[in-house]
Length: 245
Image (cartoon, rainbow, N blue to C red; front, side, top):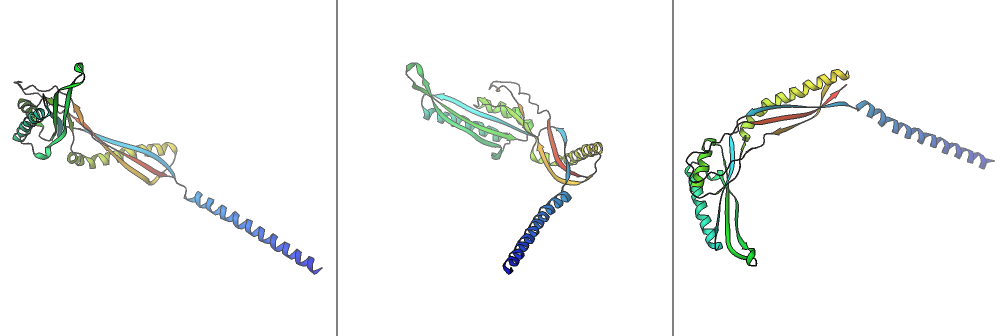
């Protein structure tokens, strides 16, 4: 009899513990849900932008010398003489070393495939990239370079320098933020919600180079090549996530 009573007590203890464990698990599961509901944020995403048309203050162009002579040595030496003359002429115009950068050097054979792929000459090529803010000198840079031996003039590209873009940045940022805020306020009004804060924000800027393509100036050209930088667009946009209720 006592054994039966003992077994019954053990059963009730186990049963009670099982109920307690179930209740604890239920409470642990319910609490996170309650917390999640309380901290959940409702948001709307909006972008804003602003832009300015400005005259570029920087120009970049490539100036090259290509020669073909019977031997690699002759082609290299002749190319070096001509490119040295071009660089000297550029510096005579006031360009500094930091504005003249060698971008390509090559010596390669010229094959005659009609005679069984034999080498009949060598090409020597040398190219410098010129970047300058003295835009009024562009015509002289081209004309005088070709006069002393340059025979490859690449396309000119115009851009707005980092310094000039920074001058506009604060003004553009203010306008872009106002644009995003205005559009977000209108959307919130339509959705019958209220903006109470900002969750995230980011900025994107652009003001890339503007290409300008021109034919190569000839050495005997009597009139300077007219070059106009025109205008380019500097823009800034913001992306904002607003908290609403």
